Length: 83
Length: 386
Image 1 (cartoon, rainbow over the protein chains, first blue to last red):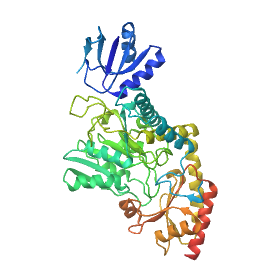
Image 2 (spheres, chains in turn red, purple):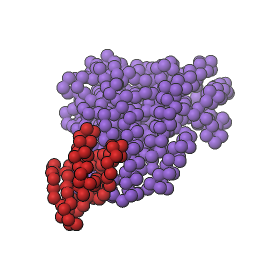
Image 3 (cartoon, rainbow over the protein chains, first blue to last red):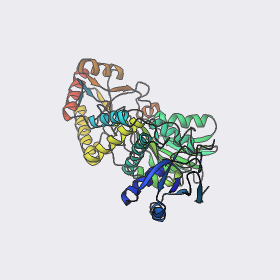
Image 4 (cartoon, chains in turn yellow, green):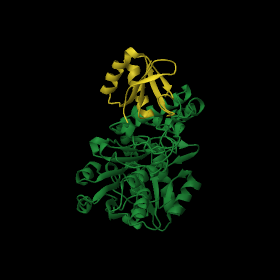
């Protein structure tokens, strides 16, 4: 599973809207605490859809705060993150 | 339209009645979407977040905003104006405004002036309520004037300002427009009109409930600072306010059900077509102005021209106080109007009706020609017998 984290709930909602139109299957989940203590939301999807989603978000001018990958039930690795 | 048994002529204060669709949208939100938006990722919170997001999109589309994140929901237009004024201005700034402004602009500016924060130029408008364009142009100081604050239409005389022309003479100042009397009854496009900050209310011509409104922020005004700080559901690990929009400027739980009603109101206006609403209100204004001309002892203020005003008409009956006229209209004819100074003392000084004020007849989407004719008949009777 890959998780995308955004700067604001507004961006998550906007991302959901454009993703729904694209056909990529996603879920909106609470940000896993291993990633952030933030009480906000993140978008999870299959690893194989990661690049497609990155392209889509770039095209819609929605900034990504970070992308993470789950490698076991408790372990996550950071693909990249921005401040 | 008759609200109950009343003829409602006070739409400049609040539109009444509200469309059934707006009432249904508020009730639907309260009954099914009352979880907290943006605070959790559980299904009901998500639904509430989507509703808020969709409303933001609806408002952004309606006003031609660059991005829906630049829509900041507020309690009313007063809060939006306060946010713009206190969020932009800092020590040493110069502000230009007009003498026709409502106290929602005048009081925050007078406060900052009295505290020695800003230098304020209030340009006297013409007696019909129109902006003295030359006066404004001469008062704008290059590099010094931070805000030019004007109403899109006066709440006293209905006089419409040429916002595009004001944008052309504002120089590097930010153009702050108080759209309390125009959002929902005149077309507004932020980019087309050169507006930097647009403050609107939800409960007048946008047909929404009270407790709704907002500030639309253009790209050039995005540096605006918050006037309140608190929980946003984002960046919760930090004790500092987030710096991105809309969270920087919106703290605490939003008026979810109210905003759902506001969004529905805007959809109704879009479906009807704002040009059609404008021509309906213009027609009512024309009939009102024509009828008033025929009543002896009545003085009408403002441009006396439906093309140059929204459906707001201020009058006085010679020898009678506005409150007596309003009282007679209400108790003898079931006609609701507002009398007095309409929170705009400076505007009344400008048009020559201070301190007694005027009787304000303000029509809306749901008024009919029959309402206007009945009001004219009632005023004729009062002028003859009062």
